[in-house]
Length: 123
Image (cartoon, rainbow, N blue to C red; front, side, top):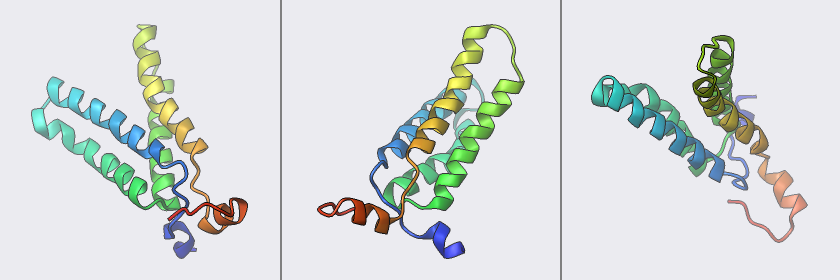
């Protein structure tokens, strides 16, 4: 079971991980500017590290961690609605859009991709 969740998966849609990392970095820079300086960036670094690791070597474990983190953030924003609505929608989209993109980019097994596309190499 553990081997299945850490085995290398298809890199077909791995650009999603860089997009998520860029979004988190923007959020981290904003947090650093508003709060504690460089210390404010520290909570975001593990998410960025997982995104980069997923880009380099996609696994189910990393995918689940990222999808869970972005989904949990979206749910926490959704249940704590406060006016103004435009800020609520902005922060909700910061969690929902990456979660949906990650669901779309489900990392398929290498064998499945190689069988469906005979001329393609995924490694």
